[in-house]
Length: 146
Length: 385
Image 1: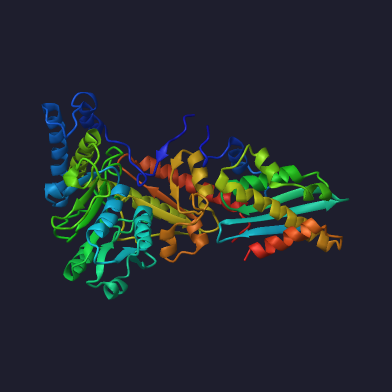
Image 2: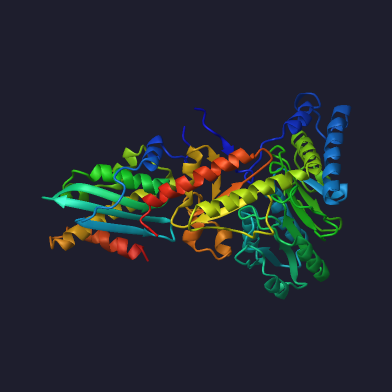
């Protein structure tokens, strides 16, 4: 049995060899969340074509859980429509990593927030209608950061 | 290929020396008596404990009756602070340094909850206490000053002789947690005017489960554990004979291996110099001169310590970090923050602590690995140079 402070094999796998690492040169949207003081900063880049997220990349400063959740969310989001991506929850991320230690749950929220911010950025730039839930999350994230 | 194992976390705990294991062996199944029993088995156990007490007393220049065996350094520190407070109800002020181990910090907090005024002595960037501030605060009203001797995180060694002297002049009790320094830095409790001193067995190649609180004759202190009145009434609990015998043996070995620290210090310096030269944007935490012979603590900019620790671990290297992410409180190291590091600077810190078995080949291996893993993690990070 894992102790409550240990990482699953999947977390370690993603941490060691993160998927979709890096930047997108001409992204449709970028989301950056977290802050240096807390020790987690996530930057998520998305490329959208015809309403579908065709490419996604990330850069993260943070612990293994922060890096693993960033990596796994890029896997989960690629190929999804914006509407589908908006509905993603941190539970999906935690489940696809075979769980996270309780004190690391906030890392999974951070990656969902980063995705929300990237989508918000994309919709805003495209002057598209921003769904209410995305707007509300955006507001919460902005107030949280300071 | 067999995975290389490089243990560089001796400050967390040390392997038990085989000679210590051998010394303990008869006390598991052969000499099994309870030290409080009057029969000869009990007397044998008691004699073994007294022998250990003599070895340790001699090592720090104390009297045997001044050595109290406890179960851990945490317990010794709890007993020092709470026991002295309990026995001296007229004074309600305590000074601790801002770089104490959690067990001193938490004991002090507990006392604060009971109405004590706790003040923290600030430290400089190297982790040395601010003497001017300290002397300004020190007065007859202070009950106790507790300052860690060798810092567990950054290795900075405080001038405890000087602290002891000024405390004695003012009639203030002085406690020092010497868990990390014991066996590495010479300690003479009389010369340094120390009233209470904490020592741990498992940091000096002895077993876990034994520790000491030196209590100078004449210091008023009350127990925190009540019962059969073991250890002069200060620590009721069946005496852990095998562990104490082992601790005695570990101290005996430490006394005989004084050149060992010089060897470790050389390797430490090689590791520090090698990392600082091969990795850009990193720096040493703690004082370079007043430093434990086995401590290396380095912060790497733009890297988070937990990731670094796990990447090193994957390559067989055991280390430790002051990063918030690795701590159970999600707070960065209070020691590094007290020294004036920013939170991100503290997040990027790694501690390597060397020991008796550390070899030059191991240090060379670490020097090869560290630049690689720092580079890898910096690639993941959104913060570029």
